[in-house]
Image 1 (cartoon, protein in one colour):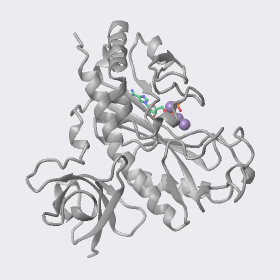
Image 2 (cartoon, helix red, strand yellow):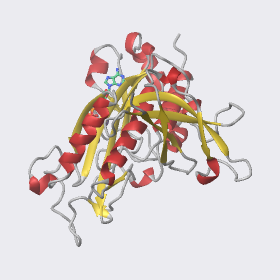
Image 3 (cartoon, protein in one colour):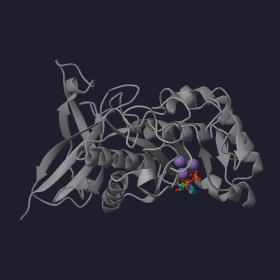
Image 4 (cartoon, helix red, strand yellow):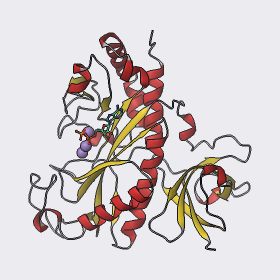
Length: 336
Ligand code: ADP
Ligand code: MN
Ligand code: MN
Ligand code: MN
């Protein structure tokens, strides 16, 4: 009978951007669901989550994912709890309003980096300007390693049961995107963190690191976002213009709270250029990629029903904080 390798992963206490941590637990029976997974612990004094004098933090499993990168293995996504059973202050997953009928689709952009610069950038100076890299093909546009990595990553995510909707080369050289969609208020965010983990672990062997910062290269190079597409059952089934306008008023009123949840340094990316609205403005627009919130054509055609795209979250944002803020604002708007 084989032994099973369970990689318990969690978010540490670093701010504003937490890091992924993981350690392996050996089990002698194959886990079939989260219910089969015991809680575990770690030394929070090494992750900015506890003092040395009282260092134990609890790992509470919330998701089980087959791990295609190891034999007989699984990834176990965990939340961090205090020994009292309360959520740890670094646990933003616990702040998400529970709504099994909320749906999220995140579009995660990122740069692959080698030698301190984006993959494919020369040691000195710059590659040719943006234009041909987006969804591009050919060695001159994508080099000879990047596609191998994104394909391997895609297979790892599909094996893990993560609902990828697609992948594409992005506007800047060395920049890529994947999209994940899931139903439930936490699931897509859980899946983004697991997909990030798989990507970073995969890239170790290529000596490539992943840069999620929203504006890693100054100048005329796109930054990295993580557009958040969202809908609730009410938005999909009832909706209507009046509700939509009230919802947009609530988003406008909470602009600062949303920006605070949408990833650090966003003023460097939300400038009004490169398909963004500037950080100090709020706007919505039909099919408008220069708006804070893009309203798909289908939304209007269906009588103001469907999903909306908040274009402001950045690639380094914590999808737990993003989902929590969006659902909180939605919750403030009466549906009657
Ligand atoms: P674009 O790059 O044009 O903004 P993408 O195709 O990359 O569009 O992303 C659109 C996202 O919207 C996808 O991740 C998709 O899953 C998500 N989406 C589609 N329908 C819904 C819905 N009803 N609720 C929430 N998200 C949705
Ligand atoms: Mn996209
Ligand atoms: Mn994109
Ligand atoms: Mn988008």
